[in-house]
Image (cartoon, rainbow over all chains, first blue to last red; front, side, top):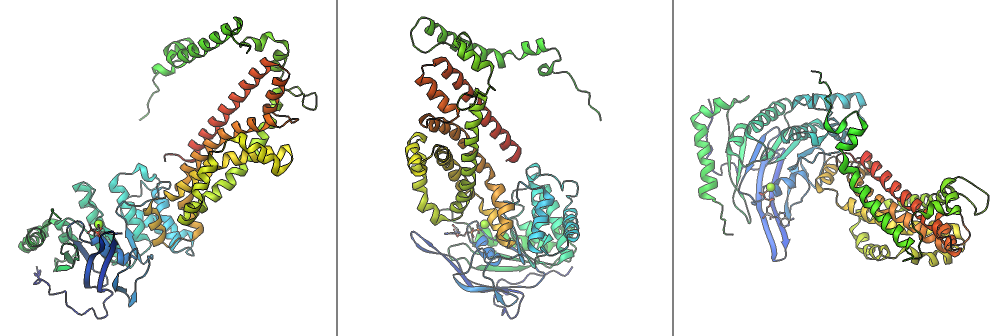
Length: 279
Length: 277
Ligand SMILES: Nc1ncnc2c1ncn2[C@@H]1O[C@H](COP(=O)(O)OP(=O)(O)O)[C@@H](O)[C@H]1O
Ligand SMILES: [Mg+2]
């Protein structure tokens, strides 16, 4: 198995060139009553098309802020985020988000939630096709049976499946997930990780995903971005995860390199950038 | 699997048994109302008050006629209580529908604009506190005629809860839903019908339900001061002028029953249109 550890910070300084998605010297400063508060300071990073990127870092360091500048809900205070050579200024369906609280409309069924998304983004598509896409994506996450259930009748795991189906049904170029599986039980979480990988394999969209779980990141990601603590957080390290795909959880966990990487991430989070609770 | 319906304690076939098993649901209200009527009748019989007792609905000949023949119509103002009530309900319907229309539209506009909200909320909160009766002279001055003035009094009384609740409902639309609309770049119309209205609907109905009660209260107030119209409110005032005191008691029964029906009807509509929210 050809996996290898990258030396720290090796990737940080690669020239962004004409990468698919680039953070160019991005900083984010919030005005607060006690003066300006710098959340992110000078982020430079390039993401390749079709890449699966995970972001990890202590709570409050600015992970959501970072991805919100890709989705367009937030704009950089200086620098820019560039997709296809164009600076991102506002939200759009090419960068779909799986929201932290699912954000499904409870007065609709699972089916209608997905259909509404397709209908909003591609109103001119024939209705038969829109219905077909809706069914296809609900089937991908195993929700064919529950398609007509109202959102409130679904379990947390099923809601998250609907949210993922909705996000992927509009065929985004970039899929953004903010701690998508944090609230789920361990078994549902592993199921959803596998489903997400399967769908990602067929669609090959670029994925940016925030997580708290190192094992999750090692199973899913091509690269793991580790952020330093705020204020003025930076990218501390980017770890290459080269396990071949399709991945098998048991297999990669038997690889000795898995534990090297795991320890390296743990060391980063809990020794070098241990959370300072007194702040 | 087929389940055989089992007779349960609450759904016995025998009506006498059913009454016995569910007596707490009817016995206590019956005792309460019966006791109240008894005390009232006794105090009337002992001449503690000039107000006739509940038995006068039957013992007074003119009131008994009104009680037994609600549908008579001898032209002019001389109509049965059903027609008096219908005339009032007609006015309420017009004023209330107008209030719902204007209240919901204005509420959405104000709810969507923080600036408009800040500008007008104090005014709404103030006008909301003005009693229906206080609007009557103003309405008469504006419209010079009884009928439109009565409808205006309904309108102006009923609109505030609808407007204020609708605006609140729109403000309470979760940011998550707005964000979904933003990412999907939903058109204004789609956002309106698929997100805004369903999300605000429970609030809108809260306003509509408060207002239907207020509207019915207001019509009585409005008609009492407006002479010469068919309507249950003016009927009460007219009976008072002529000292037909037991007629007033009968009319008050009609008013209470209709108010209760209106409130129940709105509650039913609310449960049908906002299921599970
Ligand atoms: N609108 C805002 N105004 C001021 N401070 C904010 C705002 N949004 C986020 N922050 C602050 O920015 C920091 C990073 O937030 P966030 O990106 O949500 O962190 P994470 O997702 O890594 O937990 C936090 O300290 C938070 O309090
Ligand atoms: Mg966050």
